Length: 111
Length: 118
Image 1 (tube, one colour):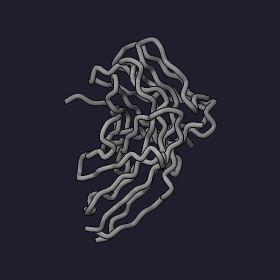
Image 2 (cartoon, rainbow over the protein chains, first blue to last red):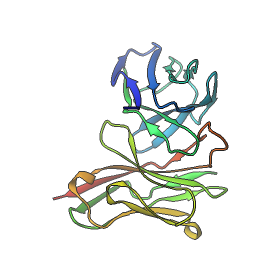
Image 3 (cartoon, rainbow over the protein chains, first blue to last red):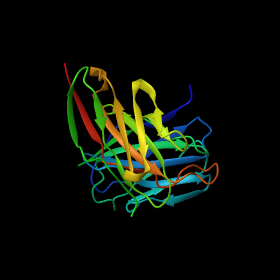
């Protein structure tokens, strides 16, 4: 079955360390997205990519970086510059006018 | 500014009762509208979408939503709620994609958490 795989489901890091969240899709979708979810704030867009080797900042890109070297993969790096990195991170993909299809998320805890 | 407002943070209904979740949006052009549902610790699942045409759209799990342009609303309804409907519901709005590259900046509301009493 086609879908989006986010790994790991839970991730723990010490403050000051960079961490990379994985997102892989086998839906042949052109566009991929990273959202951050915090209680009571809904989803906020971090980065999105509409084509390989190109990506755009979303509303809260500071402290994050991405790459899109392959159509199937869109990893997100949470850097030490991100002041409040503890959150639930959701990856999504889409093609054309089809709605966003989401992965099951990665919960990142930084202590 | 583009925004989505879900006025109700929490709603509690009895099983079998009807449900309406409110969604208001602010958008410069005719938007594409979506409702998603999220179970705890999971990703989001699409319930329904509105692009154009009939303003009453049917979705999965017995949900429907009505687009009212004059009120900038896209409220979600279900005639009879089941205990399994307890989850968080998100309304989202975005511009129609220009090409195959998908949406940019799909905006989500803060969500409404639904609890269902037996």
